[in-house]
Image (cartoon, rainbow, N blue to C red; front, side, top):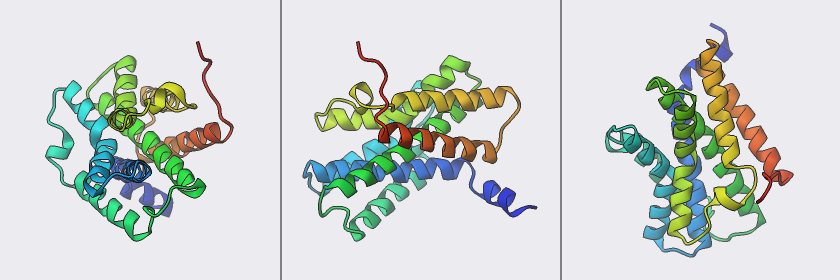
Length: 210
């Protein structure tokens, strides 16, 4: 077996889900620091960002939320927050922390849009259903986070964000329709989506306003 095939085989959808969980935990942590919340407040904001979208998705699909059955998401959140504190991400909010936030939030966005879309495909949903499930998984936690801290939800007034989540869910569905599946497809789309998101942010791409 070629080494690249082995790597893709090891890092499957479960890993992609945990990557998104860790990334959104960091973005929630940094928002909590920016708002000067206490330790419990930071934990709540980080947890809500990381698992909120998945819980909403699972409720819509009429299934018990994964976080109530699998301990790995919560363990990932706690481990990520401990590392964030050890690396002193809590000390200041500056241009470097903003870049870390954008990168972490972008990783979480793409990872969760693909993970959510994959769940929709496994449930036999049509294209619209897959797009909705992928979108909710990707942005649901961020929307709940922003509402909790009294900010306008990120997807409503800022750059090319929610659109990327929809695009990646659509590409995964299209790949499945044409018989392309597996970890190589998932991670290839992940890399593509992350590049699109970061380029869009750097160049301030926006949808037309009304």
